[in-house]
Image 1 (cartoon, helix red, strand yellow):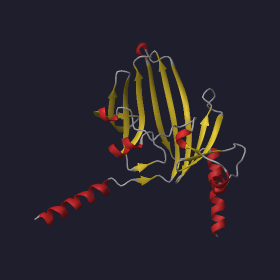
Image 2 (cartoon, helix red, strand yellow; image 1 turned 60 degrees about the vertical axis):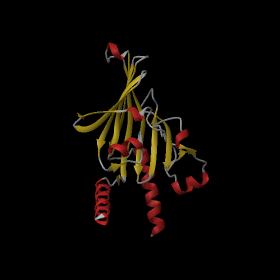
Image 3 (tube, one colour; image 1 turned 45 degrees about the vertical axis):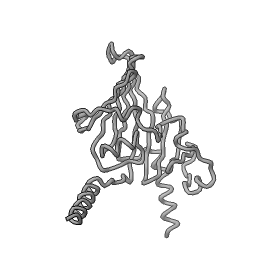
Image 4 (spheres, helix red, strand yellow; image 1 turned 90 degrees about the horizontal axis):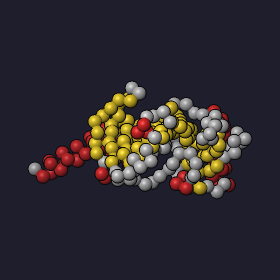
Length: 226
């Protein structure tokens, strides 16, 4: 009888794991956008919008464009990111070989990068004190939600249920717990009366600068393998 129960438990575990199998997205882009509302308790009229990061990825290779915050149409910085290493790039160079770059250029850890998207290994502050909220629909997509309320901040998190994972995540640990992708964080600073929205927006296409670099590297790789 014990053997049957053990086998049944093992089968249930296998079924549950197969239901939550993660699928890596092979190609696409990610935009990180933030809206900041000042004197939020008096209305949402005083607002500034920031395009924090434009990322494009091809499998595990990530190219990040950091827009100028005052003039978003101007690119301030360009990075090649692989695993947890970050390599600054020159905008004028259209023919950078990633394989040579990682050998010749000294990288910095993505956790120490000062501009663009924030890469963090830390957990969400007060995550253990979170409270589950009802699901909601935003922009035609259904989201799971939870909130964290502290004396200083009130924050809501929106997770889109999906098995597809991206090479960048705002908080990977929350995505694993909720089996989805964290796409939005709304936070209200009670002391300073500032309301901030942070959005992760996936897209299918590469940015132009990233497209040129990826296509050049793919061409070189194909040529070497022929």
